[in-house]
View 1 (cartoon, rainbow, N blue to C red):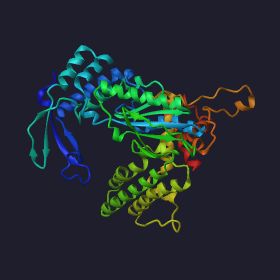
View 2 (cartoon, rainbow, N blue to C red; view 1 turned 180 degrees about the horizontal axis):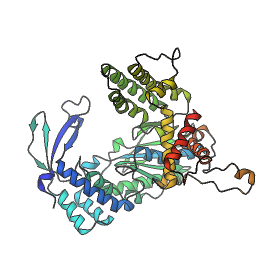
View 3 (tube, rainbow, N blue to C red; view 1 turned 120 degrees about the horizontal axis):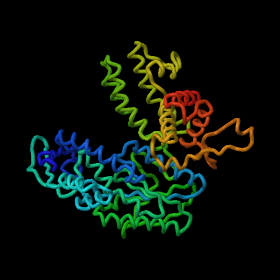
View 4 (cartoon, one colour; view 1 turned 60 degrees about the vertical axis):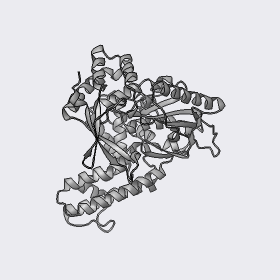
Length: 465
């Protein structure tokens, strides 16, 4: 039995911007008992290790080795080759209404039993979910405790695992389209060539809506949208519906924090993050003027500035020099400030020190190098079986040795995608495949240690710049 004292949650409302008296303008922050969270952590690790093989590969949220970047990487390897080939890909983005707060406990227990939980584990989860209470603490005032009849416990360690188990069978109802999940963020993508393809995607949307009604998780139709990715000047448009209500058609969409347009362009996203990064960099430089501890300044920069410049950067990495320079300028401004802190002189380029010299003196790499190295390391781990992502791995095709001797002298590990346009030719995955092919000529990708491979890859990436 789960102790009753551990079931009480303190909820602190945090305003989202200028919310005023509107309750919907506040984000609830849950504070739970520390012993309860420690105990939940142990249970969560055990349950997740036992159920890992049962969890859907389409789910990228709250799973070790998965992230928004892996979700978007799966998305890109499916969409980019199709658009490069002149096809149209329609993507439906479906948004649940307060998914974590509306999980039905009885439905969740049935899902836990279906996925293979033992009777003792089911009894534990039933006790864990039963008679949970919470109260609101705001500006020193506390409400009376009240019982929660539904939803997973926010702020808990078991809550995210419960939710992905709750939604685990959703991809099974999708027959024609590809399905990608990150927690409760769902997208369905399907190549469309004619009316039949449109109807297939609509059929899958209807199946997902039917699943949502059966499982008492409903969609917010106002936030559901559809976008067509294509190079065509006049794309084919079809009115998709959630139930009886039409979905909003958009020309650009924010997918897990990344803004992408119908042409698969990330220019607007890069401009936005540069503005945000400059704003935060100004704050860091002003507040750190009197700091003498360099490590503290670096931590502030990494947390408040570089985190924006590198969020899912392997997906939107620019191939145009203009946008690459735009990103590097943000970091260069910081490294010059850091250099002046360390050595007492401000390095005005080009009159004194080159940018690469300053970067090396303060211990930083170019953002371009970090992006390419991160993706290269991930692809190598996929090839070696260290990381698990079947959606990306199936797009990495090993080259079959040719019978002609002269070609065997220049071996390639991976087949480079044949691109019709720069969209596929300049995409991050294609670029990394070429780097790995050159690396394999110098070090065995499958037998050498990861540190040896990473050292060779890093040198090639730096040289490529």
